[in-house]
Amino acid sequence: MNDQNRSDDANQSQRSEAVPPDLYAARINGSPETFAKLRQEFELDVGCRGPHVEVNPDGSGTMLVFATEERIRELRAAGYRVELGENVSEIGRQRQKEIGEGDRFMGGRVKPRGFGEKRGRASERRSTS
Image 1 (cartoon, rainbow, N blue to C red):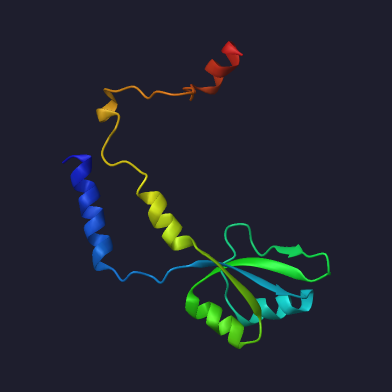
Image 2 (cartoon, rainbow, N blue to C red):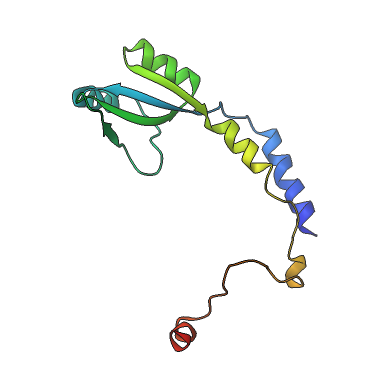
């Protein structure tokens, strides 16, 4: 079995599953008290760095979250000030088109090219440094 067939098998299973709704980058503005209440009321995707509130010059704060359009509507309906940003799901789909298919190294017969360096074992690195 070659890499191409395995790739098709994976794509087939993805097609049969429900597609999740798109995520948008959204900025929520408010006071420190607002963010404490917000985190208690809503489960939010704040990325891998955890909740981070950027302090604005006026003393208020802004938190970046990733949310569906439905969640953004819920936040607005609850009285939160939410700025809708870019569709990060669509950006991800576009970027995935840039990725090649197949095995560009032909099972190890083609050497990688570029500015990278091959790293050996730690003892080999120390002896060349």
